Length: 107
Image 1 (spheres, rainbow, N blue to C red):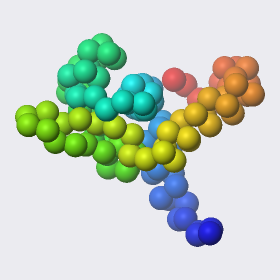
Image 2: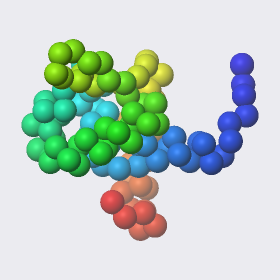
Image 3: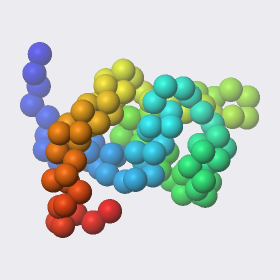
């Protein structure tokens, strides 16, 4: 089953992965759900910044939140996103030196 996806939508989707903190968040919650406080503590970031990135990830459909009492627990939205994160590692392993030497993109 193949559907044609609008290029602008694809770019928006990829934008969800295009920030170091968002990748760190995704890796942090890839195998277990966590609260904002747990993510902030693990990434040693500010709650405001982490919350903004969580909103971006949630808006892109990459994560979901589950309310329990006064806490929201965040997790990766589905197995396909987990698989994609793993596939990034597989592909990067093959092109890591080229990516590391690329001067066209600044981290």
